[in-house]
Structure formats: structure tokens, C-alpha cells
Image (cartoon, rainbow, N blue to C red; front, top):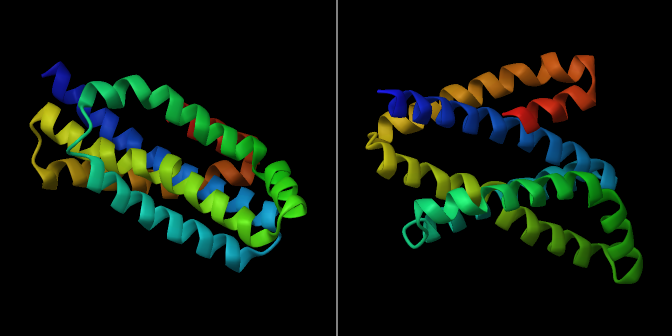
Length: 167
């Protein structure tokens, strides 16, 4: 029973984390590339590519590998938030903006959403949840994450990032 509660909380927190991360990445990408529409388009393409990539490889990746690599993915995600602006400027000034967009598209695809798409099937298998129950829990977390964005962001951007880190 405690194991089921742990997986339930894990799925809810995963949904919260993904929504907060999405918001923060879009904000930082907009600042880095100074174009809101292209930043949203870049993120949307990377988001759905990452989901597809994650589901494609989810059967080949073990639950243990996910657990062991989780901290590496979180470090990569946080690194993206911290270094996206100087890296976008550096890549754009050395090559051109298209190359910078491509680099960030690939990085976001592999680190931001692919992890979440790999994670859900592994939790379903490990916790023996139905797809409906597991996805419903993640959706509840996503809704909580979306609801918390205006509350956290109205106080400060740092609080929004702290919410992402905690979730």
C-alpha cells in the first residue's frame, strides 16, 4: 500500500514538474532568442518530438536505468535554464541563428520531455497501474502545475523555478 501511495505521489509530482518546466523553458527560450513566436514553436516541436522519442525507446530502457539517470536529466534540464541565453548568443554569433535553434531543439527533445515519456510506462509497469489510472494521476499533477504557475510567477520567477526544483 505504501508503494502504491509513493507511485501515486510520484506521478502527480511528475505532472506538476512537467508543467512548471514547460513554462520556464518557454520563458527562457523567448528571452534567449528574443522572438516569442519562434520560441513557442521551437518548444512545441521539441516537446512533441521528445514525447515521441521517449515512447519509442521506453520499451528498451529499464526502470533501474531511469532511476539511475534521473539526476543527470534534471541537471541537464537545469543547465538548460541557466545557460540557454549565453549559449544561444554564442552559437548564433559563431554560426547563425538557425544552428542555435537546431541545437536547442535537439537538446530540449532529448532532455526536457523524453524523460517524462519514458518515465510513465516504466511507472505503470513497476506499480502495476492501468494506463488510465497512471495517466489520470499525471494529468491531475499537470493541472495542479498549471494552476500553480500564476500563483508562483506572480510572486517571483525564482519561486517558479524553486517550485520546479521541488517537484
